[in-house]
Length: 366
Length: 261
Image 1: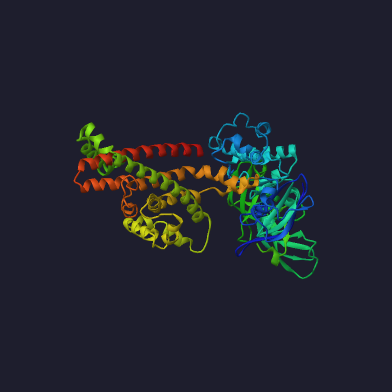
Image 2: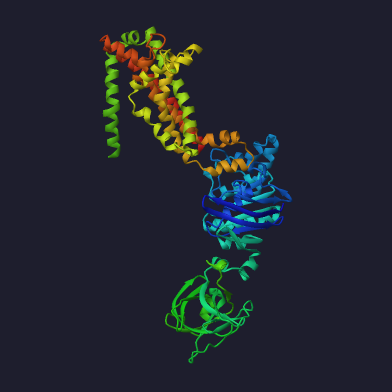
């Protein structure tokens, strides 16, 4: 079942939650709607579910316009962030609910629910009440309940948001396997980029009611389309630079930027990811020992702080002649292998392996 | 310490007066007690009291649920005014309510003018008793249920709808089981209030022995005859009946609450 969203707009009073959003979800895809709170991702999901109605635009499922169809008739499975289980019903009755209201014969209900309890690995817990289950178990019940009616699409609203970190990771790996088994078109909302990238076939990054970028996790991570995406995908160093003749300059280091071949210099923003910077000892004359990559050359800097976060060592430093702070992430092993001590006050050379340049424009305002 | 305060307050304010009441009634001896408390007129009064109170509490519980739902869920102009109006019966002297109700429902009254020709006697009748008892007990039924409805998790209703449930199925299968314990608590409070009501009933019921005389009115008329012991025996029986009824309702409420967890 494919889903096509066309020019959907939705306002709540003066707040524009969605502004002419279009989106295609190919059949069998597991797609993540990723964005900060207030970006419209949940509203979009609720409109696809029929829980909310769009002010403008259409939703098409497998060639059929379902814009006006009520949630009851859409045959979607929906999983809520806070489970939304029926507290007074047993696990069994929760899962059976959709079948009961459809007047499915009792014997069939029983076998279907048993099948689902097996699928979500909760065999033997059918008689429990939701209050007697852990968070992860409750969310699996919610998933089984959504799947019971054999929905055409599965929608999940921050499905792991209420769980603690360890359970969250387990459950999303399990959900990925489950999706591969049943192959149902699924859309989930998340504000956690790690979750989106680990789980999804396609990632849609949203901001201020608009889609910033859609693509595979690799494509979105490697070629962020906008400064917002770059920013949102993780902490990043942002600097002012100049661009002219197809090259941008960051502290004198040239970076290729063929999109701007003009001779007239313009202000630009240079984005450097902490893990795409290399650190090396600074030789006596202020010249870097090594330098390679798309950007050529390196920058002398002094170390301000060093913190170790497991396998990653984070180094905050200040480029010489500047008062900006630059963060560099180095694998801890690499940091140990350096021919120097990474301590505050040490002089180092910073070499960007990769940098991205964005020209400030009205649509790039963050 | 807090327990001691609780025990002291309950003893001083509730248990002590009740003990005096029971002791006074006991002074008649078993036979005297039965003779005074179980006369045909007294039995009829217990029946009217219990029957009208149960009926009124039931009506209040159902109406209270509807009003609480509207106040909690629907935003309309004047909602705040209506919300404030709910508490008026608690503040109004109930005798005033009784007088106003009887003035409305007598043959020449605004409502009686239309209703009496249809055979509906709102004043000086059993119906009148139920009407004023609903008036005095409704605030309890509303105020107990309203916060529970406000705190309901809307997600579960949406989940039910998405799973294909109709509005009615969603209400009866998903929403009602969650608020039923509160509705029953509201019923219990309304019942307690209705059983003890005197001021409004005395003005609207006509106080006809065997027909519209409630037990509290009978107690007062015994007091007016200076038959203090008889009056206390009737009070003790009324008290025992009320207590039994409330214990049963509370047990039901607890069972429902456990089920709704």
